[in-house]
Length: 307
Image (tube, rainbow, N blue to C red; front, side):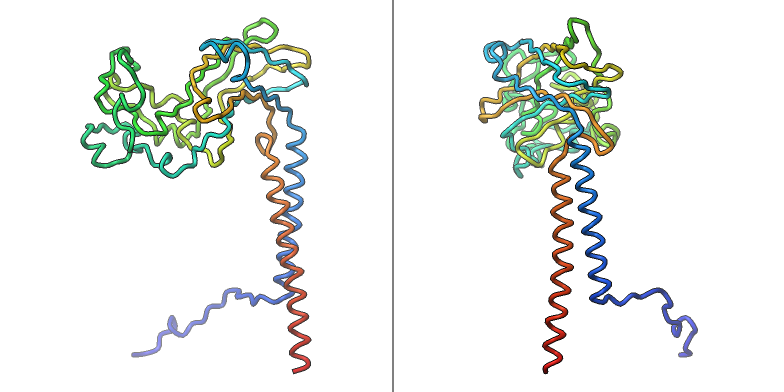
């Protein structure tokens, strides 16, 4: 076979050879960048104004399904103001919990009870009865649900849906509007969640954004999820914000706590001290590694000198 020019050609691209000097410089530069970014995030997080109110221990919420709470605004809060709910001691990151849902069902595909049990996607919660519904439970169209039918949707994640509701928002007695749209990831809304053709068997609208937000599991046992936004209204120090709460979600079962949070935002999002500290720690590790490389190189060089 003749040698072709293609076989003989050599790669002429840049092929850097790492040295102790270049490696050290890279680690030091990365370390400084991470530290500066971490400090910047901490500074911006410190400027965020946040009000956190635990409502499950409020007297009127402890003994009633419907209760009113009043949040005193302690600092001026310019719009946009994010409204979150927070749960403590709720482990959404448990492996069995996360797996207990059917992505195909949530995407609008119809299954029979036998088909779903064979797939085991929703194990151990399949039927409406296993979801905790009782006689007289209604579908989203108003028809009574058959307790022995396959729940739509089924699974532990759907069963534990956070169903508290926050309504009748008033600022010093005047009604204000809460924007509850566009709170879920756009990719989730467009690609992952669709209703089935027969709505008479669905216990919840699977395109409901509050439901979609809940179905994305949190990584930590103490987490908060977006409920809505206050737009175009500034909350001023000394004002009182009143909200009516439908207190349906029982946090006492897992010895948990429920909070409502008001927070301003910045270019990095909400308050996140953990992210800032993580960047600083990572930056320090990079610089320590650079120092270790230098010390190790010099020690090794001295040993070679006396060999």
